[in-house]
Image (cartoon, rainbow, N blue to C red):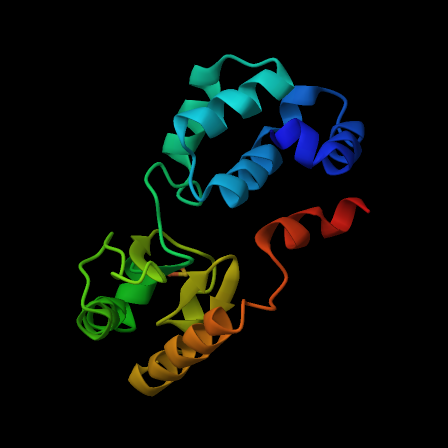
Length: 175
Ligand code: FES
């Protein structure tokens, strides 16, 4: 299905690399965007396109926090609570986000909109508390900014989300 639906994008992507297998992380983003998470089917499809063993794709999905092995919400809020961010209040921020969304860490809201996760350093240590949502950074957060961000994302979801998709962002540089 990926091969048919994204034939042009995949061809352009593979042309950028000397070896097909080097495109694996990009294709995994494409698959995840299509299926919502790295399902068994998604991992097998990526492996087939690249002539890889499916266990190789599975091991990458398990290693990188940007790939989800379980279904997630439309917006995945990944709060960094690594050491530098913890020193700037990340743990309290996670508690607040969990309370406001009424979900535990790794939980998803009943409406399927938000999943809350904690992750290791995202490279924005001096701007904590911070989170990454669908590859976009939100920095120097506090409760008010979090409320506004959630309200904005809810409004966007209600309008069909006009933001460029993850796939558009990932593939924009190969055009
Ligand atoms: S420790 Fe959180 S971004 Fe670096």
